[in-house]
Amino acid sequence: MSQIPGTTPVLVRGGPRWDGAAPDPRAARVLAALRRELPADRVRADADTLAAYAGDASGLLPAGPPAAVAAPRTVPEVQAVMRIATALRAPVVVRGAGSGLAGGATASPGGIVLTTEALDRILEIRPEDELAVVEAGVVTAALDRAVTPHGLRYAPDPASAEYSTIGGNIATNAGGLRCCKYGVTRESVLALDVVLADGTLMRVGHRTIKGVTGLDLVGLLVGSEGTLGVVVSATLRLRPLPVATETMVAFADSLAAVGGAVEAITRAHVQPSAVELLDEASLRSIDDNRGTDLASRGRAMLLVQTDGHGAAAEMAELERVVAAAGVSARRVHGAEAEHYVELRRSGRGSRRDAWRLGEDVAVPRSRLVEMIGAIEDIGARYRVDVGCVAHAGDGNLHVGLSRPMRPGEAEPPAAVHAAADQVVRTALDLGGTVTGEHGVGTLKRPWLTTELGERQLDLQRAVKAAFDPLGILAPDSFLAVEKGPR
Image (cartoon, rainbow, N blue to C red):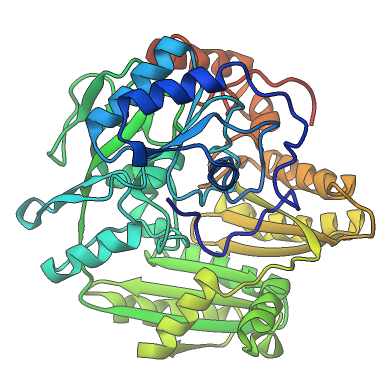
């Protein structure tokens, strides 16, 4: 068992605060039952493991420790865990690599953390059908590398691809840099094997590209964040590896200028594979972390890619429209292009002397520049440092909010949460959504009623009750009843 490398708690510092907490009365029975049914190395309950697996990269932690971490290596072992949970009415939170940023993998005190990371086999690659069948613990980038020799690739590419797992991507309907052309995870999932709350194994979906028999349970399960069942394997659609990829980088002296270039790209009706925007704060973060000098070249950067047989012609058109918008750009190739993409994925650092909170919102592309301007205003109003990177091709913004820690502070200052609230509410006012690709988890639950309304939330909870009548799967996640205002 391992914790994902390099993650830093966002909202909490100093580790779990469980000292003095009364033991959950269920914990001993749950742990004993797991140890009776599973091999010894599949169940851990030592303090270090419980602390490492009690939350995800959001840093949100439960009020008390879970009873145990179960790491099944086979589907029958997953079924055994769920049968135990049902018999003892024990809450279960499913966890992959723990790279989620919305608190969706936050354990329940006295419950079970079921990690699928040991279900890590690529079961089948079918080049003639352009599909692969993989277990939930397969790392995203490992699948992509495995299918490359067949002239194929797995299109979804979250920034966490080197350590996030397919099961986690499915749970949150993860996105990535190539979303504007290839869509989010849901567009690449054909079928799922899912263990239900009572331990039943259910197979949904098709091995065919087209299939419309009955309700779309695959689409329902993708993005359900572990509230409906435990995904143990997936049949995934693969795409042809592009014969060519072109990359363009542009710097400008103002965010408005780069925003104008993005609007011009949208109007051009060319389908880029990636359109990424980084503001000045993000460029400085990369410089501080990686020793680059991006911020000296402009106050904002645009990274654009096209791919396929028409990549060169499409990029030539995009160069023309970007230049017409008043932004000079240049094409980069080979290692230099890969370097820029890697900096966008993982170049930013994190200050350990600051409270940090990340938001993930999306707005219509026509409102992107307006949203970025509003984010800057919100930072100034609440005296919070803000940084913004955007999957500009589909209107998805990742907003970092931070404030230096002050002596004696044990919790993030109210201004950080207030600024985050304004970011999300502004996105909703502009016709957007509270999350573009990170999921709702527990952190975004307070805004769900505003976006969806009580009637729709009631319907979603009724769907959960049909899958999970006892409510043992992720009971504190986004479908829980909110206990009060944020």
